[in-house]
Length: 372
Image 1 (cartoon, rainbow, N blue to C red):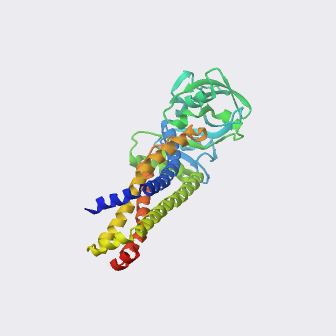
Image 2: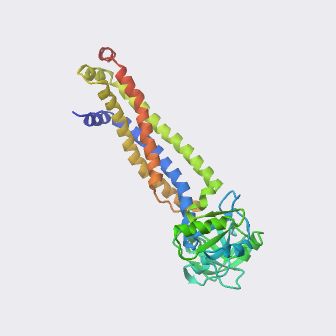
Image 3: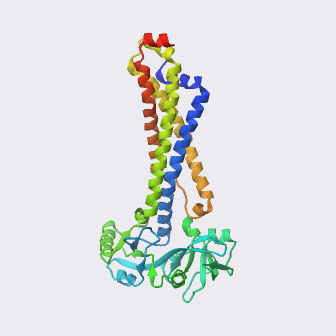
């Protein structure tokens, strides 16, 4: 019989221990997959939102601690618009405002004629237009959750606004955003003359070389940070902290999975002392015996990883069911989000099986038979 067949027989001989070990590893892998996916979901969600609103590049405050916390003078936009290769500049203010029930709602302030407003896919009512001040457009998800339609009133920061339109964007974050005139949000948040950042639209041709040239010119316009839509969250310190915490918790969980394999295989070796002595007396080399124990540990790890992948995807579904998260983030499994935890789990499972395997090959056949 080959090593694989013998390893399968050994795992089947103790089904309860095998199942519990697999579940333990699966929970560790699943937790790691879900936590790492959380940060990636936030990053991709913001990038998708900005891309859909027509931003080729984003200019934000260099020293800002988070992507939505920057403050730039609105007048900087006129200077940015004069840079060669720039087709349009739209200042936008992002803030959270509470409604009458105290629920935080993401609000975007945009000037009339901005790309964010021009590209808003209105499905009911109308878009914002010149002269609007106390009017807002709701994403369809936030409108549905609040039970609002065109003509209804919504209270934000104790101020009443009329819902004039409903927009059905593609990205989940945009579908939960309230759009209002820039001046109205500036007054509401006491940030008159300020914006969170500028959305830059590039002129043709939009080649890589052209993009980098314009990007360098924008960066020289002042103490600003110029990013692609997908890079906006790279400098967000809050997301960096979240990623660091997620990574730390994931490593602890995976280490516990490795210890699970160590415990299971160590007990297995102790229970099979006589058996190990017999096969060693039959001429099994240390390498072959070592391979058998390691293969059993790797098989446990493989089964745990398969189970953990399903658990991790299910956990991300639970995240989406939490309104404060699911309204803004779509979780999409990525190669990195799945590959890193799975690779880490397999390495730690192999490491967990090493000591029991070493213990097994250290036994001499005679000593093993006497102890058995």
